[in-house]
Image 1 (cartoon, rainbow, N blue to C red):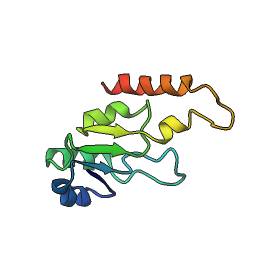
Image 2: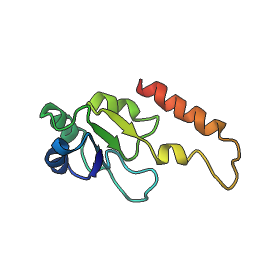
Image 3: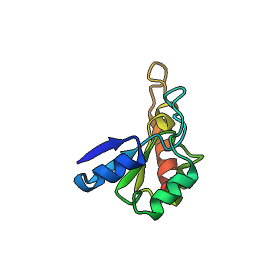
Image 4: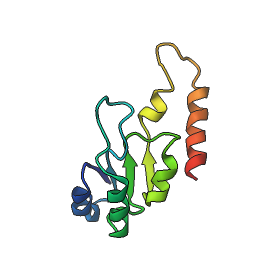
Length: 112
């Protein structure tokens, strides 16, 4: 059971009642124009020190190959990737999913 949260306070309040919580936006959104990161690196690190961010909190928002290692470094339990994958694929023109699958595997290797 999971829920989405849009503030560290909300994570703190809801985490006890869910198996996982998604926190967004951790970075500037790739898929939503003008949807900027909601937290500074210092705020995220402090939240991890306080136990707000832990292995049950999944980072969401603006995650791609350039910052996925930061997600791990910050102490999140994982990353949910939307625009970082789907912007690599155009369903109107791309009929071979192989490039999308390879990009996913690249992200997974980086995260492991």
